[in-house]
Image (cartoon, rainbow, N blue to C red; front, side, top):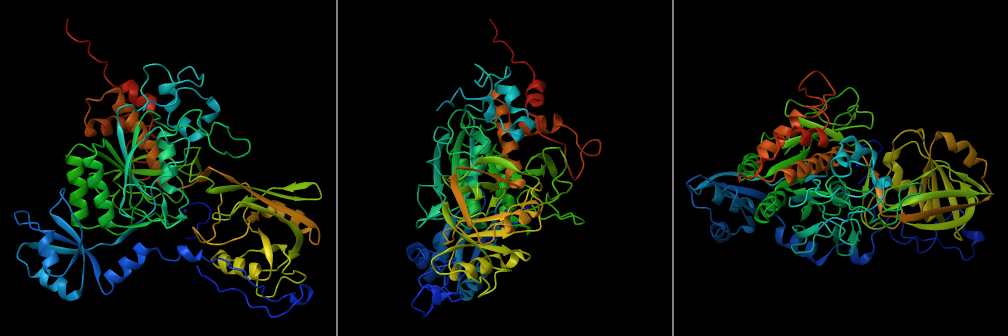
Length: 575
């Protein structure tokens, strides 16, 4: 997975240098280097192997039955199909079938249609006291602290709405339950990737980056419960929009942040079975997910659940992309992203069905424990501004800084297998992983990429992952490149320290802000319906674009305090 900026594998054999001494191995490949490789035990899990063997030559489909037909997983099995799930929201079965089995199913008079099961991708009581330093710019933008800490003393106000009593179901990549911010709000979970009751963002020892954990933190991270944080950030971490909400976790995205429609629908049904008030989906696809999915979301909505989903990140400068699915369905509240200045994020998808916008350009929240790193480059007592690459491991190394040009094989002149720090001029991010592998094979124990981007811009570069073997790797922007190059030939120290938080961009991050505000409103008036909650959010949003609703900003920026103020007063019980 490669992430550039603004948004969000090759396993190599051991190198085969044939020289004996370090000096003689200059410019050769070094023995025992596994550049970019997966640990052997994580190459394929037993579950992956079993599934691959079972599904060889089969197509994943959704078998849709007629409204008055008899839905039968057993009938699919009798015809040879491998049943994955039978749904209750819609008359359908998820299965894997051969072409012959599909033809026999299509001939069944009770079967209305057979649709492809396509892939989608990513998108107790609360702790009462902490610090106002935990209130991120994004949480303030949606007015959450004005609801539960009106006097700004870092303590939740007694009796204030916090999301208490509201169950929010996050359909995403799972949750790192070890994170101290999220232990209290977690209520229950199910893993539809590994088919168990532990929704951790992990498979066979390989942990995901924590997309679902990031989403969960935006909704319900706790005051005063911080993990390892970044320099100049609160030691208490951060606080979510609705710290009193209960979190239900449906893991449908794997560690590479992809999922099938069938798993998403299974997650949606599970959410409903657990009594979820709100389902939050920071995922989607540019393809229509099909009638079965559309009807399933409508049925969940008709059953009383508010469904909130990300608009998508496919827009570019000069190109406005339409809403992703399921956000494009009328039953779903679609959320776009704005930056801290209230301007629409360039990547945010647009359309007439867009409902609201929320912060999503660069949002600070929880991730998998030690899932990110904070970097430091030091040479001769001087420190240089840098950013660590996504999936670069924590660790440190001190060695001679060697000019490796653009990272070609044999380009690290003067480097040895004893180890060095590689400086690489990066002009082609699509070759990033191959370049990192090249210099690691030449002995690099740390890598510094010099890039064209300014350090004032919100960019992010990622190596392939998760689970790949890399060395500590950082990037320096154009303001620092020249100064770093002045240290060529000197001893340079590269240090990446693991942290439990990260800044992520995307409509995936905007969505949970709206979800959290909805939880605050609903907790203040538990008798409200999903439609009433949605209506009050839309009617009280801060208008940012053209007057009224428009396809870029929808009804505007979601506002928690304005929504609460618009609620009618609670009627006192009759004497």
